[in-house]
Length: 426
Image 1 (cartoon, rainbow, N blue to C red):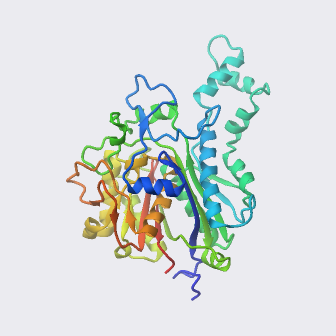
Image 2 (image 1 turned 30 degrees about the vertical axis):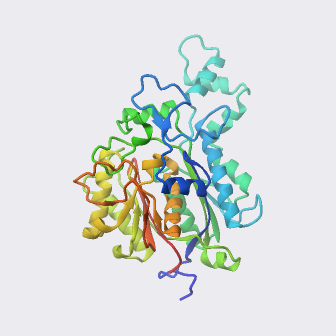
Image 3 (image 1 turned 60 degrees about the vertical axis):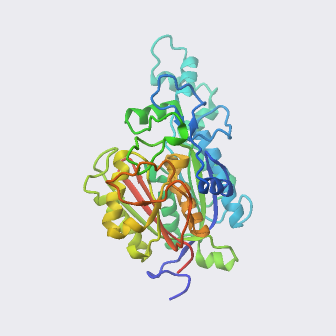
């Protein structure tokens, strides 16, 4: 068998470039230093008024301005920044001429409250403003940029034009698994021989008043507002919900053969992808845990690895009471008693839940973990949950010998993806 192919005879998919932006900063070097130092990027929201709201904190990216603000515009800016870093590191193609397709995870694009108000004011309606009134206002030609962004969801188109990706860009939204789904699509395209390279991005800039209130009404958010950095408590007994956050992660994927031929540095391997859908409930996981169990097991099978081969788990670890419990159930079913000895951590304790971007951001962090042989901690793990017996890496980073790791992404609506990542080709 060729050294460029896996046990199943498929092209080995490697990573040759990575980029990321979170509330901790722009660039993977800055983020890695702060993550391994146990620093939090969660803070008081200043973007809009939070008076009267139960949750007043988030992992906002406040150092990037987009005017006028919209979550779509910020998602586009975050994705662009992460992709520039990833492509520059990879050294692939030429500027504006990426030799492969774009797979973008991005939140649903919708007209946000400030823009609705602007359209309503221009509609000329005196009392109740209907949707038809908004459409008539938009048709005046005074809101072309708004019309293009919100009617056509132009984030992927803008990125494709900027980086010169090939073919129609793919936008996808699979809830909190979106970033991992984008990577999975890139892996599958390379394995099928459709391309030698793919640009995979997960981006989310959707901390706005409407989104915050929606999640709050689901009782999904932490209400630990003071101090903000102590709010996200994955796997702790006193966890009370997740913290919304923003960010982007970008990966340049290539076939090992292509990367080797051009002398690229191999940063890691996407050895396997597992995916299982769970239609049990819009927000809750199936109580038997079968979709999560199947997702992790499928990822291992796809990678040609056994449970004993995994040295570290980058958990989905949102900090919601049910999600952490179900992730624990799934992992212990797959790994058995050994799960108590496999180091596990949640980046969300420091950067919050970056939603559509989480799977990509956490894949980057997992690959950095393997490269540096150092595990970022789970901060705020002060009160262990006796019902969740895991080797959570608390407070401080831990050095460890690691070859293979899993990065879990389990989303609302039952979208589950587990990525199996390796330090180097087998």
